[in-house]
Amino acid sequence: MKIRRILATAVAAAVTTPALLLSVTPAFADEKPAAQTQEKPSIAELELAAAAAQEAYDDAVAAESAALAALEALGSDTAPLAVAVRTAEAAAAVAATAKADADQAVIDAQAAVDALTEASTAEERTAAETTLATAEAAATTAGEARAAADAAVVEALDARDDERLVAARKVSQAKTATKTALADKTAADEALAKAKEEAAEEGEGDEDCVPEPKLTTVVTGLPSTVVAGTKVTFNLRVTNGTDKTMDEVLPFAYVHATDESGLKDLDDLVHLQWSSDSSSTWKTIDNKNYMDAISPLKAGARADVKMRLTIDASAPAGNGVTFVAGDYFNDNGTCGGNPDLEGYEFMIAAAGSKPGKVDDATPSTTEPTTSDLKPQSGASASPVSGTLAATGSSDATSQLALASGAAVAIGAGAVFVVRRRKAGSHA
Image 1 (cartoon, rainbow, N blue to C red):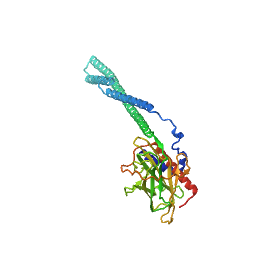
Image 2 (cartoon, helix red, strand yellow):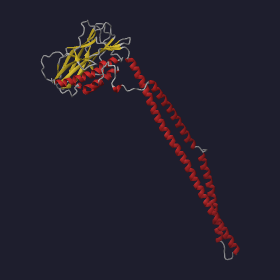
Image 3 (cartoon, rainbow, N blue to C red):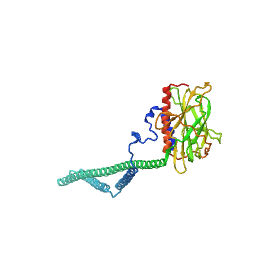
Image 4 (cartoon, one colour):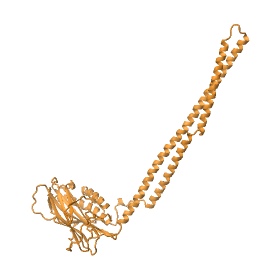
């Protein structure tokens, strides 16, 4: 039951921060606080958003796939710039061969010139020198052609690499876009799922849950002063004062304590336990769970729960209060609970104190619609009916449980601390 976790958190926050009382909403008020009136997206709107996010994600995946395909295609031998590189490299190879041939021709012509002697005729000398000059001119031209061919290769390689770099960047951008789209899709899906879950929970909570003041919880035998380092036992009586059987009744109890100033929380030093008439085992109430269900509690009947309060010896003098309440759940889906939270205040005396005979703690009721404290009527004298079920408490969740549990406990805890501070009481 989610109310158990909500209740524990809400009470802990309220009793340690009494100012929170100012923001407590009456449990059955017709209006919500301004902070709760902010409109939430409807399920239909969230469905549209989820669909749009899915479409954007699908588009991103397709774009990433296309970018990867484009990058892979550029690595193919048939890619235009790859073909251009091979063509330029082939031309550069031809130019290199031509340059080498021209250089060899210069060497051969120079050798011919060097071979001339004094006996060589003027015509032979002129012919050899002309051949050398022609070869040198051809070598120069071949060198320029080779340089141009080599430059063309570099240009083709740069163009190819630049194209591949651009394509790789597009792949990286596409991957980032896909990751972002996936995150948006996940967030949209989660928001939709959460909204549907909340709608389902609200639907469960709206099932005929009503306040039932005739379901009462009364504590007897709890001393008004408890000495630190001791244990006291008392009784919690749950009474069905209606004319209808309640299929399952969940008693609730919570203990809170502070030092004399009301500023220091002593909850870790106070422990509340319970047991049924049919069992001698004490079970600790950990401020997160109701006690096991009374199943059933007939009309006009009552059931008693044995309670035990233990205060650690290290606890300083201070003030405490034990809150009790009850909720019911029927097999037909109806549910409800007492709208008032009974608070039984007690004083904590330092370990070793001798308070003597003390009266029992008396109840003061905290209602969800007011911070006034009023006495709660006692249980009826009907015979005991109903036993604590061994199967544990119900998993049902009701708006009433939230009202008579968390919201009221916040107000009760805060009022208790504030009133104790004003009274300046000491143990």
